[in-house]
Length: 126
Ligand code: 5GP
Image (cartoon, rainbow, N blue to C red):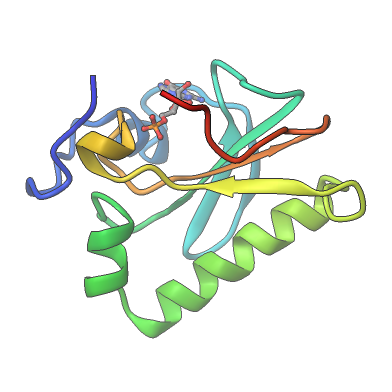
C-alpha cells in the first residue's frame, strides 16, 4: 500500500530495520551516509535500492532537510554503486517513488537502480 509521504518518520519501517541490522538484506555497498542492497522482489535482472542512513521519509523530506554533505554523499553513493555493478555502459534507470501517486510503499527514502536488460518506455500507460 502506498504511504503518505507527509507523515513523520517511522522508525519501525523495514529499511530502518535493515539499517539497524534487525532483518537481513543482501548488502552490496555501504559508506558513512548510504547503504545499498538488493531488492527482495527484483523487477529487472539488476534491481538495487540505495538509501540514506539518515531518517528521511522521502525524496521530498531529504531534499528539504538533509545536510549538503548527506545529499552529496548520497548522490555519490548512487553513482558508485552503478559504476561498481557495471551498469554505466549498457545503461540503467534511477527511480524514486514519492507518496501516494508515486506509489511509495516503504517510508524511508530509497532510489531504485534498474538494469541488466533494455528497460523500455519510462512509464506504463494507465
Ligand atoms: P517503493 O514502492 O516504496 O518505491 O519500493 C519499495 C521496494 O522495497 C519494493 O521494490 C520492494 O520489493 C522492496 N522491499 C520491501 N521490503 C523489502 C525487504 O524487506 N527487503 C528488501 N531487500 N527489499 C524490500
